[in-house]
Amino acid sequence: MNIMNINIKEKIREYRRVLRISRKPGKEEFLTSTKICALGIVLIGIVGFLIFLIAVLVPNLLGLPGV
Image (cartoon, rainbow, N blue to C red; front, top):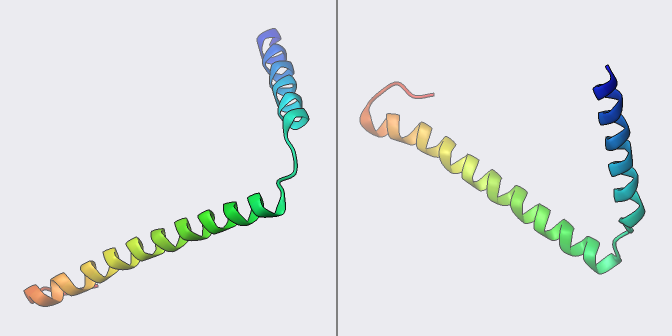
């Protein structure tokens, strides 16, 4: 029980420290982060779509029942 209280207090101290040193991003930094996130989402979508196409096309080419 005592160890749990120490861990909670330590975590709260860590969170407060992070909040103290964090800052609001500027417009340029925000736009750069947004572009990178959007690019990642698009790439993951393309990979997923390619996997779907392979799952549909390969069984059809082999004459097996597909998805």
